[in-house]
Length: 392
Image (cartoon, rainbow, N blue to C red):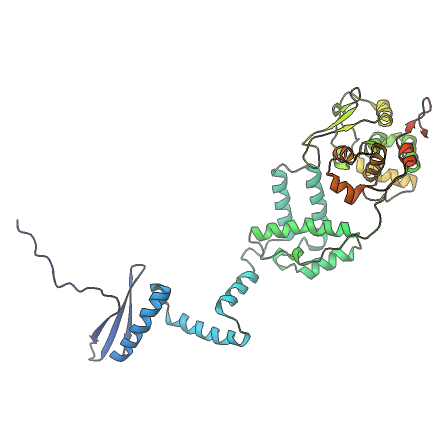
């Protein structure tokens, strides 16, 4: 069997080869073969050989600088790019700059998402990620307040000035304003990650600074009066939660999940477990003698320390004693200030309060006289006369 003769006359595809073409009607064209892009041959046609040779020289440079794709650009796109460049020149801008600006401000195709739906989606993910219940509840509260104004709005259409006017019109304290912007900002940041919108409007709002007012605390006499009133209203069951706040410095979110099994009266300490601590760090708080006296009266073998709906009970207590609004974190501030003066050890106070000495110095510590501190830690229920207090 003889081998088939190898074909020697096959046309070679040489890049930028110029070929003379004669059409059926007798007209002549000059073809420039530029190469292949995605398997497809790229060819350009010209009326004269000079035009073809001129294009070939320019094409060689384009290919060297930008690759073969530059030669595959349709003529319509090339003309559009030229027109746009001329219009942008008035603003001293380039096509690249215009493209980046458009992509930054372009509303995604999923812009129909409502704020309330995105907020609910984020909250669900927080809960699924095992975030603390108090944290998730706080976010849910903030989202609910914001939903009343913007819940039915498309999240991509909410503007920074609208959010700014909303948060300032409520006339809240600077710390509350920052808290709302922080929590609502989480929804917008989540929306950006999910491509529901292109930016976070809360990031453009100036945060207010705290005023120079000193941190509010209650003196020994005030604390004694509050605990006495709590004893007079036993139906509210607030003596133990208040005593833990004033004499152990526990946060509200820590008190509401505390169990009696974590209060060790014989060994004189309270265990705030990692899962129940706001900082996710286990800590041990010493039970001072006066706190022990309050706890022993109500001691239980187990179960929650606080009664159901204790937030509503606190609100009711404030109404009964004529103190509807307590200063923020006043019980914790009172504990830290009096504990530091009494113990004289900022590291010990910081450890029992559950934060660093730097935080203690910046936010919690207030000057308390030695006499004030001594009186604070001598607040005891009077023996045999439950319902009255002694403050030596």
